[in-house]
Length: 138
Image 1: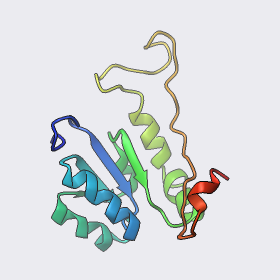
Image 2 (image 1 turned 135 degrees about the vertical axis):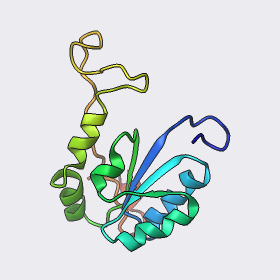
Image 3 (image 1 turned 90 degrees about the vertical axis):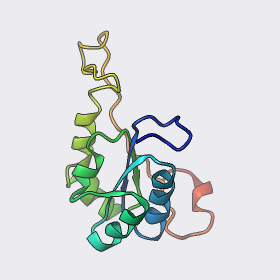
Image 4 (image 1 turned 60 degrees about the vertical axis):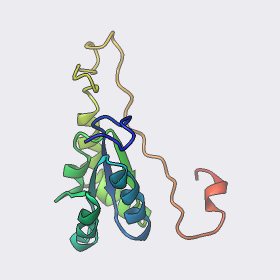
């Protein structure tokens, strides 16, 4: 599925965490016609987004598979660690990152000797506190 303006190609967007903020974040790419896959620890929270065209993944690993864009809206650092790192999402995302959109292998030795950039999580939690976004990374 392409974006409504035709510029998105076949982009897959994964949204992990579909609470108040995550569901709002997932609605926008889904409404724009992007393939949007959602996952939440509470399956009923993710299921509500199927009415706007989002696909519901059974696991966070399934959600990020083949998704070049991953949005995480998880509530706490502990949940991020359990889902992203202990749950294998970072590994699954990294495994998907070795192939470029053209299908060519991007691992060391296959692309002019350069290693692909590893996915680097950025801590951007807002936690409902005013001004936290202006404070920058911790």
